[in-house]
Image: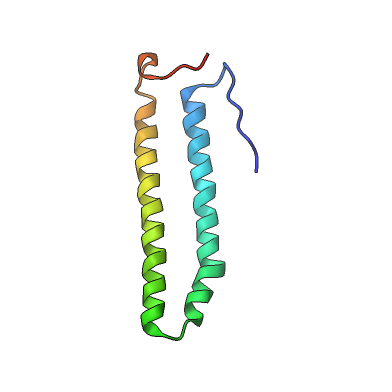
Amino acid sequence: MEEFFCDSNCTRNDIAYEMLKAESKMLCCLVRLFCENLAPDIAAIEDPIKKAEVTKKIVCAYAFKESAMSKLVDVLRKFDELDESHCYHLE
């Protein structure tokens, strides 16, 4: 995985873009995890009650992650509107 280094020339847009790119990669991994691993494992469960319980837990976990991603996108959308007085500076 490539790393992102932010130097003194790094802009808020650069940071926001890299954060969104990282979230996008994570989402692709979660989709692949579900399709290639979890779905076949769920299909192999014979007990319908157990299958429903496992499916519910996975769907809830994915919904929680999606909600967190949505909040991050909202913050990054507003990120560009902030002026420097609202940001923490590391010396």
